[in-house]
Image 1 (cartoon, rainbow, N blue to C red):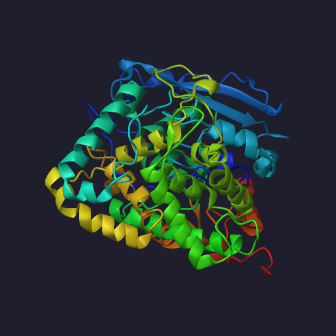
Image 2 (cartoon, rainbow, N blue to C red; image 1 turned 90 degrees about the vertical axis):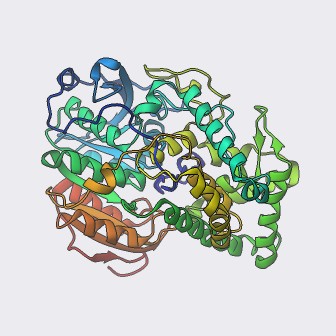
Length: 522
């Protein structure tokens, strides 16, 4: 999930860690320090920086790229270019701090361009660097074309009654993603993204990786630390992901968190005469369910000819609910749909503010920003989450459990239940994923790292921070943020100060210490 940093819709792209795994196909990856033939040359490059192209790019932001192997097990198979951007240190630089904003599927270059002011304090000692991971943004973006992404939406009862038909739809959807994504899809996932991080670290001239990862970015940071423990510098994980929770449980947690956030939003909205759902919170909750069901039965066409369904509506709501600062914009976007049939503002939430026609070709060099496919974030979300988990239920198990799972998810949330369950099911038909994260990311022998958990986080519950810290071992130091919203760095001045103090000066808060709200006395 993307961190709560900027209040602009294009930065609210949150992606729940709730799907099962797409495989890293072929031979197993070599050990981190194994000098596999052909790998060494990727550690012999430097980033060439230049002004970022684009009207909206800040003038003080510089862009560059690094080249990585498509397949770390066989570097001769080809290469990928990964997009980078940086704000230079204002004084003497001690190196770089790399940022990952979450997702999986969040574009780091564009988000750094728009949220740069949140990180200016770090430029007192570092070059602040964002990047588009493999398969994301300008870095060989994956796409699923016109593949159906809501096989349960139109007639969930029929899917339960005929699970074989559903499984066939899921296999067809997986094939569409393969067709539209090109060779990178076979080599996507956090294990390879962490190896890419190490190439970036070296190309930036840093002996150790200094890193700030939000939400899914915490998973990426933990995997890096497990692969390259001797290269970990100062590492912060904010909005900590689970490394072990079963996928079906992750989806339920996400649905419950989004439902709670929706009810809080509706309580706020109905106090305003302009609320498109009326002035009664209970009736407003019923109205939202009716809108989802109506759009699933009769989707609204968009400017690009694609249909905007009830599940698209649920996805847009999910993105807009992660920060109270976005609620007024979300209210206006919903009103525009209900009053005028105009989906454009909701599409900005659902697609990260990007409005491009579907993309039809695979690229290995940097992709032009205007050619990034509209569905890149959800396509990358599925691909990475599928690649990161080895679970694949057999067809018989899917048929046996589908009715029970659907009922459980819809109890968790009548609005987001099917949306989250669909994301879990979409891994069916894809190859088995890696078991590295579940089996190997534990008991780390690294310098101490800071884990930030927020008590009111609707996406990554605080207990995941505690559980992951216990799993990582004595190197993990927990900061308890007693606030609301997804992640703490962008919403809590206390968290912001403590994270900056650690990254800049190495000053860690005591394990288990807390930050209250900004109105409390610390």
